[in-house]
Image 1: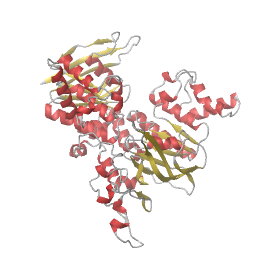
Image 2 (image 1 turned 45 degrees about the vertical axis):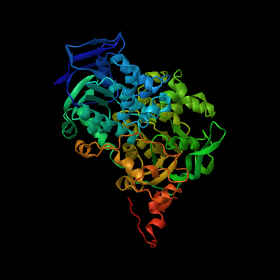
Image 3 (image 1 turned 120 degrees about the horizontal axis):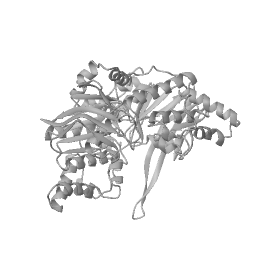
Length: 570
């Protein structure tokens, strides 16, 4: 049965001569349909028009638009779609009461059941909380529960996992697939990530500039793409699976020794205790090298970056850097003044540091724009006139103006589509080849970290649990948490995606309060021993690899010969 039939659905914004999208497609009952394409392809515009939530002044026409049953939508940013001033339970019950005949008590019971079905622990307690008290993954689960509240026949999921870390992303996608299988609900999944599409969908539409340029099964799109744009998307995605060559010089640019940060948490009754945001850790970055840093949200990656840039002081330990450090932030829109021209944004660091005359500053700005391949941009524009990728290039140019030796990229490209992401990664690599610049590349995207870094570290609840050569860690993870992260990665190949086992659908608890005297990962670890719950493991180093796990202690592996070669114990 066809749930949705669309012919020449055309959306045109006021003042525009060309339609934002003009598409024809259909959705079968119970089907998992993927819509892929770069940012600006018209994917979201088409879906919003189907939901009837575009502004009134937007002109929407179609030759045929047939719909059977009901539909609901899950948006990309759950924080924006949930009311921050209304408790989670009330938002759910309001939706149920608005669309179904039931009492308030029945609506509350239904809301609690829905939260349990989408994998939220203690649903009764969560209903009393506000959205800002929930993690990103929990907020997205609440958004899914609201979409399910009225038993829709069709769910449109618009980039539902873009801002989530890899394990939460897998859990959300597995949850959507489980819902589709158990309820026979059709799902239209919109994404720029072919790995996300491959993990979910059997049929795919590829969009470019508001048009569907190719349609077929996931296998056809992956193995035998026809349209040049589809081939380009596929090629760019495959590039993320490449591992860069090992680079190492004798010169150390950054060295940290026991660097840590703790916060004091006060309780209602006057008692206070120290919380370790970053436990003492040591690592180094060499000249011309990229060190990748991965981990879930809340693992301490950004806190570490803020210590290295002097934004917050460390509580213990020290670090030394042979040269200047600059940082590129995740949200360029928040790090740029929207009223400043590009010229003023770029000149500002030079003015603050009193570098050169006006003419010399203009020359330096022009050099940096050339380096980031934006020499033709009109510097009188504001950032509002730029695309997301262009804003990130401006951020790179501004960071490089003062000739840093180390550039910290904190989730800098996480919100970009795969084409923009690949272009920006290639730009960083080109700059590194020319200048021998070093990078600390922080990301929750394991594919991106594998693509750009020679060495990497893995963080969990403030601890650096594993570090070593990127290629070796991906080939053979030693720490159980690293193995869990890599297991959550979405393969691009649809055949491999079909063979992947599902993850646990329940939300992941933060166990830091339960393990003050033990390993923070112990409550989640299938290899946990008695000692893991009683004391924290040390750091055990074997050549390039360092791991924080009792499985690699001498007490566990017994006495070792001098030429002992350690391998993964998991």
